[in-house]
Length: 614
Image 1 (cartoon, rainbow, N blue to C red):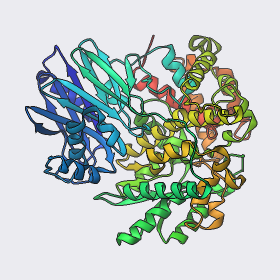
Image 2 (image 1 turned 90 degrees about the horizontal axis):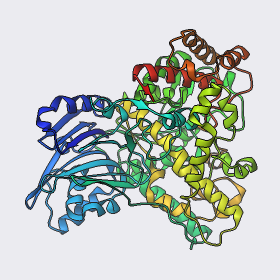
Image 3 (image 1 turned 180 degrees about the horizontal axis):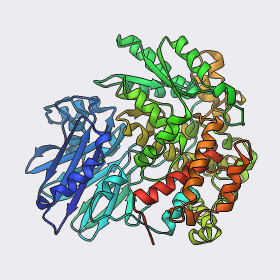
């Protein structure tokens, strides 16, 4: 994994502006602590930070290769999991290679197939390639959006970077935000509308899209989307196909020249990934697999089943580790760890995020990075197999909004009414919801109840999953740890998308088809365990720390966040204590303590990033 940045300009001689590119690249140092490189000529400036995973010597970037009378140069963040097959195919077409890296395979795939190269790729990626003959930049992002890519257009120029901070480091890019950007943060956040870059003039290349930039303008093209059709396979064939696709995805993603581990909560999804990894490493003689879990001090003392978090993870992680014979490492966090890492988590994400759900992952990733460079995680299974409660609860299925935002009006209670009117919060969320529904790939003739579940699935994959992928990318890369997500393999996603709902829930169990596919890989009680999401701390000391910190901020009349909030409401929530009724800020894990932490992050964001509101 790496970080990339670039600047194309048709008027300014970029040879005189090396320092501007260097500033952009420097912001991405954590994404690539093992090296950096730049290429600057009159029209283009490309920069790269590298985290070495494959071919330490041969994979140095920017990488240039001549083909005919053109030189193509690539900067690339990600991993191509089928690069060995692609290399063999390209060699059969006459290409030669001077390295073992997937970077060179990706570059020559573009030389061979042009924009159609993305159709050949199995991986997670964001890359940009400059053709010095045609003066053309081609950039693309992977199908599910695991790897980020932001860009900004200015008259006669284009800027791009792996993170917002890379663009904001350029002197021509200002941190200006309008009402829609504020609505993204305070009404939708930490979810975001695909393609929205928060700041005015900054956009994110949506998942499954590529762009081409030339002197005559910018073109954006969608190269991948889900398609709905009748499912041809019976139950047994479906379970076997799910099993085969998952096994292939995990095995491919174990390829690296550095240590690879898995993140293991003891839930179904992470246990499945760990099971395949342990088996593969055993066959290859590279085991034992090392697994990592995260938990909090005094969790058994303070934990309460709330319908979402249904049980403690630690005993299950230990059980799965014992069953798979892994070397397990339990990372135990306490309130001071979460307090210390709250603002670093903001700086990693560049905008307010999931509060302690972010900061705990950041500390967890730092602990893993002491022992490994690559980890595999279980994200996306709930989105594609329908594991979340909102796939099954009547109130969510009947609601005319995002199913994780059923209590938007409760959330808005903590904001200043004038600010709510300014950003048109409910209208903005409603418009984004309707926009998403218009994109759902329909199955002709599908009954209304099943069509609604298809809508929930599409919303989950395209609007909820990206918040988790953003979180995973920013927090782990801030710790210089690469995390891969096998359930995001597009072949698996495409196949599962069209499995009938009755089959997905075979046995009357959420994710029943996945459980059936994994039946002989894991203990029966693990296979049948109810979903419990990534944990957040229930320790009242965290609530106390966050409430005191936020109230102290709000005592300052110049606090940037102060005009946005209802001071009386915030003070009442703080006084009510940790056992009071929770106002959900986002989804199922952000209650009152996390709301306070979010506002602390928002205040720091407005101040540190010198955000200008227009």
